[in-house]
Length: 580
Figure 1 (tube, rainbow, N blue to C red):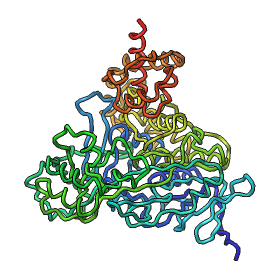
Figure 2 (figure 1 turned 60 degrees about the vertical axis):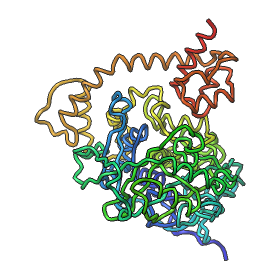
Figure 3 (figure 1 turned 90 degrees about the horizontal axis):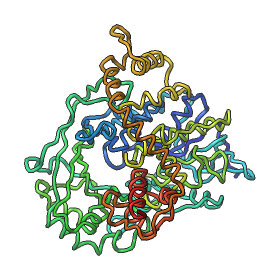
Figure 4 (figure 1 turned 120 degrees about the horizontal axis):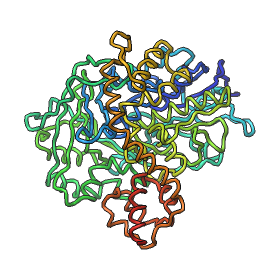
C-alpha cells in the first residue's frame, strides 16, 4: 500500500516537541506561516527531562533574549517558578544571571497550552522516520507509520532521541530518555544525504522521595524575596515559593564510587560518546579531582504537588544498588528512597559546521537543525536555536530573507557563531566568558537590544510596542514621564537603566576597542614554545586543548572549540611577552 498523504500541507514542519521544537513552532506560526509540530508524544511537550531549572550563568541572558524576541520560555518559567535567584551577585552586572526553579508539570502544561492556543500551529502525534525528498528537493517528512507530511521547510529538533541508548551500570536499553522510545531511522536518512553524524552523551541524577529525607541534617536555601520575573512582559511573580537544600559528599561517598567504577559504563568502555565537560558525572568528579574532600549537592523540589527531589550534582550511571549505596553515605540521606535512578544516555548529533549561520543545512536547502542535534546541552541553548531556526525556516518558505544575530548583538549570536564556525567535540554549553562583548550583552538590557527585532518579525503582539518604544526613548534620551503608562516597564526601571548605561559606558567602549583589535590580530603568530599550562587565567578547557593542538596564529586559536574571546586576549598578551 502506498504511503498516505496528510491532508494539509505546511510552510514549516517542526520535528520534535522539546524546548527547541516549541520555540521553533511558535515562532513560525506567530509569523503567519502554516506550521506543523510533529512529536512522538503530545503529553511530553517541553518536558524538563533533567533539572527543574531555567537560566544560569550565560543561560539566563539567553532566556531573556529569547523573551525579548518574542519567545515563550521566560513566560513559561514565570508561570511555574517557585525559587528565584540571581547568580554572581557579588560580581558586576554584566555577568549577573537569573535562574529559577520550576514546577516541571506546570512548566510542561503551560507550554502545551501555548502550543495548542497558537493560531496556525497544528500539533500532531507521530514519529518522523525519514526525510521526504524528490531528487534534491526537500518535500517534507515521512512518518514511521507511513504518512507523508508535506512542507516547504523542515526543522529537526530531536534532542537526545536519535538512536538514543540509556545506560544504568552495564545494562543498556534503547531510549530517547527514561521511559520513552528513541527515534530510529532518521539518522540513517541524514547519513544517506551526506550529513555527518556523531555520538554524544549526557546524564541525569537520581530522584529521591522527600518523605525519606532527614532535612534537619541539610542546609536550607531560600530564593530571592520577592522573586523577580524572568520575562520582560511580567511585573511580578505571585507563585508560592519553595526552598532548596544543600548537602555534601564525603570520603565514604567517594570510596563507594571508586569501589564500583568497574561497573560504570563511563569507565568500562561501554559508552563511546563524549559527555558535557561542565556537567560531569559524580564518577568523573571523584576520579578527576581526587584532592577534593567533598562535592556540593543541591536537593531541589520537582514541583508543588510532588514529593520527588532532584539530587543536583550527582549525575551518575552506576548500577542501581551502587546508586542507593552512595546516596546513603550522605548525612540526611541515609534512608533515602530512590524514586528514579540516574542514567546516562548516548545519542546521535550532526556536526553544526555543516550549517549556515541561519541553522540551515548546506547539503539540503530548506532543512534546519536546532537544539541537541547540533551538539549543545541545556534547555536554554535549545530554545535560542529553536527560535532562530523557526524564524529562518519561515523566511525561507516565503520571502527567502534571512535573520541573523551577530556576536555583538546577543548571546544567541555568540552561540550560533561558535557552533557553525568552530563546531563541537563535546556538548556545548553557554557561559558569559564565551562572549567578547559581554559588558553590553547583559540580562537587564536584552529588551533594549532585541525587542524591536521581535516586533519587526511579528513575534510580539503590537499593543506592547508603543509602551516599549516610549520606555526606550526615556532610557536613551532622558526626561521624565511619571504619569505615562509604561507597564510592564516603569520609571524605576528607566532610572536603573540610565545609571547602568552611564557607569558601563567607558568599559563598553574599551571592550569594543579590544574586540576590534582582535579582529586585526587574526594573523598574529603564537610562539611555538608558549606554555599554556602555566597561564592560570585561561580556562582549564582552553589550557588542555591549546596544549594539545598548538595553534599557529590567534585566528587558529580562536577557532578551537571552547577557546573564548577572553582566552584570546590573554594569549595575545602572553605571546607579546614571549617575543619581547
